[in-house]
Each structure stands twice: as C-alpha cells, then as structure tokens.
Amino acid sequence: MSSALPTQINRSGGAASAAPGPIRKLSKRQKAAIVVRLLMAEGADLSLAGMSEATLAELTRQMTTLRYIDRPTLQQVIEEFLAEIDGIGLSFPGGVDEALSILESTMSSEMATRLRKQAGVSAQGDPWDRIGALGLETLQPVLEEESVEVCAVLLSKLKVSKAAELLGALPGARARRIAYAISLTGNIAPDVVRRIGLSLASQLDAQPMKAFAEGPVERVGAILNFSPAATREDVLEGLHQQDEGFATEVRRAIFTFANIPSRIDPRDIPKITRDVDPAKLITALASASGAAAKATEFILANMSQRMAGSMREEMEALGKVRDRDGEEAQNAVVAVIRDLEEAGEIFLVAEED
Image (cartoon, rainbow, N blue to C red; front, side, top):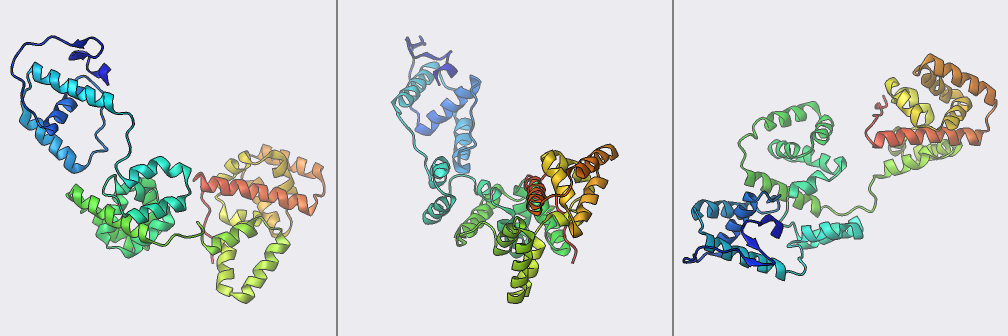
C-alpha cells in the first residue's frame, strides 16, 4: 500500500516535511474519502465493486463536500491510515456469502446450500451472481411462473447465451411477451433490480434440495445409453409394461449409435470423427448392423470422399467384429458426442414423434 503514496509519506524514514498550520478535525467517513481520493490520484488499481450502494453514495457525498485538504491534515490522515493497516494481522469476510465463497471449495454443494438457507439471503454481495450460476433446469420454472416484468429483468441480468436458450424453450406467445417487457426495462431503478434479485434468490434457496442433479428419466436414460443392446431393450420392454409414459420418455432420452442419422447435424460429423480414436471409429463403423448400419453410411457420407474411401478399406480389412467389441466402440463414439454436446460444441436434433 505504501508504494501508492510515494509523494506524501516515507514509512521507513518518517513523514515528509510540511508547512506548519492547524490540522482539521475530520470524521472517519471524511478520512476514508481522502484516502480513496489520494489512492486514485496516485494511480492505484482501486476497485469499489464490493461496496454496497449506500456506502458508495456516502463516499460520493463526502468527496463533494471536502473541497480541498491542506498538507498537514493530509499527512496526518495518511499516517493514521498506514498505522491501521500495519495493525491488521488477518481480515475475515463480513457476511455468509463472502465466507462461503472462501470455504465452498472445501465442502459439498449440499452443505453450502444448507448454510445459505440457515443464514437467509445475505444483503451483502450481488444476488444476481448466484442466480446467474444456476442451471437452466432451475431457472426455467421461474420464467414459466413469474410475471413477465420479473422475467424480463431476469433475462436482462443473465449471460446472453443462457438468456437466449431459456427464451427459446418457452412457448412462442410467452417468449414474445417477455421480449417486449425487456424493451420497457430501460428506466428501472438499480435498487428495484437488486430487490428483485434478492427475492428470486430467496425463493430459489427455499426450494428443497434434491439428492440427484438430474431427473429419473435422464438417469435411467444415461444408464441404458451404455448398456448392452439386449439389456437396454429388455429393460425398456419391462418399463413399458409398468409405466408406458415413463418408458416413452426414457426412450426419447436415450441416444445410441443408431440414433446418429436422426439426431446429429451432418455438418457436425467431421468434428465428432476428429475426436474419436481412429481404431475405435473403424471398429464402430464395421460392426454396425440393422438399424445401426444407417449410422455408418450417414457418417461416411458426411466426410470427404477420400477419407470415406480410406475408412471403407480399413473396415473391409478388419473383417468380422465381435459383438462385444463393436458395442464398446459404438459407445465410445456416443461418449464423444455426449461430451461435445455438454461442452456446447454440437447440439442434438430433437427426436420427432
């Protein structure tokens, strides 16, 4: 900190000489304003983003009333400030949000959420930072249930990519109403936006914690994705007899090698094949039969003719592939597709009914 005050005080050699004169009596708020002004004048990298709106307003008011400070008074303020800094051994966060931001990496997300609920929504920090970090599945119900005015503020505070994805998942009429409401948010006061954020954060924190991040359909679908084909069909048949609706949803959630022609954009094939181990890809293509054989032709048709020809030669040289090796290779291709989808590099086409 002392390096930012070279022209005013020398901590090792004592105070610089100054003309004698009366020293003004100042409040702590006035002294704080003087220190901030001096640090800014000295070019210090000073961030006030962590201050509350009320504190920033008071700082601004003090800076407009001080006018000028004589050198003896300035020197005394600096000495007091440096003495306080020297006396601080360790500082602690001032609120639950700040404390959890330090400790969160050392505990489970369930514990962090539980502590936030027990403490209530903190008035410190920006509630929109927490809301913006939530997943789409958590924010989607808010857009479906809240007023269009609140939804307009919510979308305006989110990253553009996330806001676009949420808006695209809404029915057309609802999406149009919210989009129009966004056009009316130009003059909304910052404190109103903050109160909306605190209210939404409080509602979202009040929701009961889930033991699983994904729903039962997604969990069953993910398991069956990488199960042997015979096991997958047997389980789906059993689910169909027990609960036809659930079985239908699970079947839609499943993505297998055979689904590639109907769910993958042809332009994404080069990106997918580039990330798959070449030996696994050849084995997967050569082993495909029945409905999965269409996936092989789809993949070969959407790459360069030279590469497709080379792969056909390697498939022919490989000969007959064991079922177990073929399924393992096809699952490897599916795993790459899932990874690319999760990273947002490709998007699966919706399955038509």
